[in-house]
Length: 141
Image (cartoon, rainbow, N blue to C red; front, top):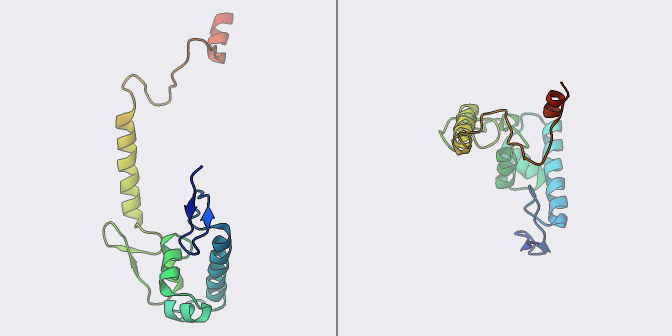
C-alpha cells in the first residue's frame, strides 16, 4: 500500500485516483468549490477577481477548477484560457477540442500499432481449454 503526505496539511493518507489530498482537505476543497459555484449561480458573469474576493479564495484555486474542467471560463467575464498544446482559446480544461481530437487519434494509432499482427480488431484469442457457445453450436449440428 502506497502512502504519502498531504501537500496541504502534511497528514499521511492513501492516495486514490482523482484525490490529491487527505480526506479532511478534500472536504475543505469541496466546500471551496461549492462556494465558487454558489457565487457564480448568484452572480452570473462575475469576474474572476470578484469571485476570488467574495469567496476568500485565490485566483489560482479558481483557475485550477477551470483547468480540471469543473467550471467553464465562460462563467467569468474577461477570462480567456489558452490550450496548453496550441495556444488556442478554451472554455474549460487544458486542451481545445481540436487538440483533444488529434491526441485521441494519435493515441488510437499508437495503441493499434502495439496490437499483435495476428489479432484483428473485434476478435479475441481463445484458450484451448475453454469451450465457447459458438463452438458448441457448431458441434451440435
